[in-house]
Image 1 (cartoon, rainbow, N blue to C red):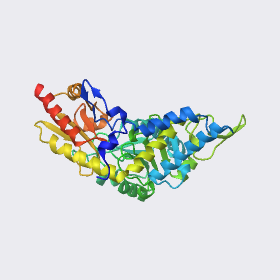
Image 2 (image 1 turned 60 degrees about the vertical axis):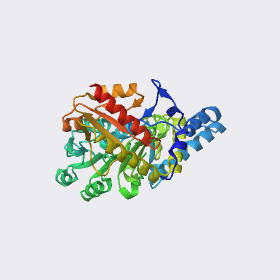
Image 3 (image 1 turned 90 degrees about the vertical axis):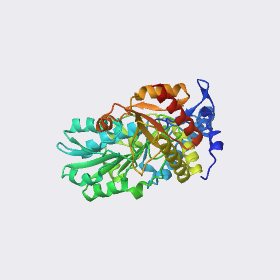
Image 4 (image 1 turned 120 degrees about the vertical axis):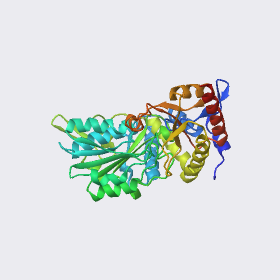
Length: 405
């Protein structure tokens, strides 16, 4: 490992506390990550030194805030290797990015009878917006299934694509299974048939090196709060030729070129899709989060998190009656499991009393729960600030809880 976890943890003040008189073990990183002091400082600095509304004034504060805001756009572009900064659209998060794409792509390209392929492992936020769009346009949703190991059945994709298929939408990494999907292969299949591809990258960008040009995806979305930045900030990347043809998602300030009662003309990219006053301070602090990740190195982060995943998995599979959902080799640092005879909510509640934060429930993935014929799971998800010692504490606590039932 090329970084020191002990030193890294010193950057995260929230981790240095006790819960119910026990040291906090935070294993809910797939839901949201914690923020380093550098991000907290960037947020404070914005409000105390140069907060002003961006793009719309000639005074010093506005100019400085605008420069910092647009600097984050360039950092986000470089992070995923987008061709141009104009392809980076700031949103409230992955959910809004998906809703924006579903609405605007639907308005521009979807007609009655068209089809959208959605994978069975998707988060609700990558299902419902497409269902809403399909309902408005008279289109149809087609499911791409997973197998019992949590692998997307790519071999079935070709047969699902028809002359009416317009888009495939899929998570890069499953928030439940941890499965890393072969996005480049899916994009090649899609484009060979004239189909576009949308990728939910919320669980991928914090853990994997992303190159949207190499992947050749048409759209890619991710959130700041899952990558050590502020909540309420996200990014939608899109190919320029598509974004140019898509109508605005919302109307208001900034997204216009000229407004008259006889008609309105729209601003250039990316501002056409950024109506109203955005989360200025959040976007600027997001730049600090990107800097932090880039300084650590995504490759080093991914390597350590994989080591944590393997270490935890090796111990958990030894526990009688415990089943892990998602057993693919290509996997991110997420373990979803159930223990026979013990409800997942009871496990999560008891682990919390022992200072361990995990997620319980359906994880906004009802179709996946239906596939496995379960109501929910316990999910432990790791970040680069987690340690093997924390995993040891977690496993021993889990065994203790199980023994009580």
